[in-house]
Image (cartoon, rainbow over all chains, first blue to last red):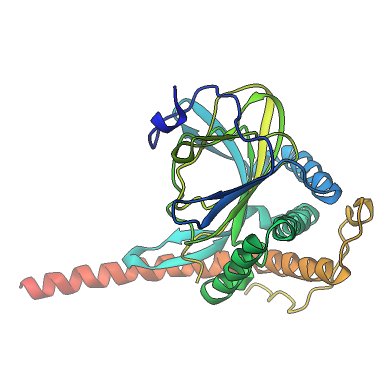
Length: 238
Length: 73
């Protein structure tokens, strides 16, 4: 099956990755909508291990999701949007912030977000400019006291997060999300059907992606675990 | 009445900092420490505010329903 045959809500099967080298992804108009970095830095590798291992033990904050027959457990951090009545949106903080014992792992999460942006910015002036604009947008639109970093309001640590194909419609526009991976097994790659891309979600790699404008999902996975740490910005954080 | 959180809680260094394999800008670390500790201190304030906003929204809806009924009379 060709990747471009997939539609929104489909649950992808197994696919070998066809993106394994450092890549910048642009849309038809030449705008950067994503990138992939198979290698990052020692600090990023250390923080991915630290965060995933510390969160793995923190079962009490897990929130289960269901997508097709795939089940995913996540820990959310940073701002959450409350859909209030009478059309009002109010921001809230993820409950992971309520436990003092999570302070260190939250600092590691915030640091990883900042280091991810700095790393991707160091690889491309265009990415750097996009992140500077993202920072300005966040400063204008979001309550800084719920933002996990200078570029992201929120995020999640996902355990076996094998999502079907979707757009993240609640994302702020033009935001490039960060996605860090740790995997032991085969598959669980990031796919972008409209770009005919299957990106190798190998351990310690980093993908950046405009998830509001780009259809994306995860291929089938077989193995011990496929975890990710994702940073995103949601609307309604005024 | 619940006690107000301190405006500037004392910053504590995260335990993992000394284990990082590469140096990190100390100003960035201090900024992150401050950000997270303030967020965590603010958690209960957000919960209290949002609980009250929910009650306020329910009352507003109830008032609007009554006003609609008055208009129909």
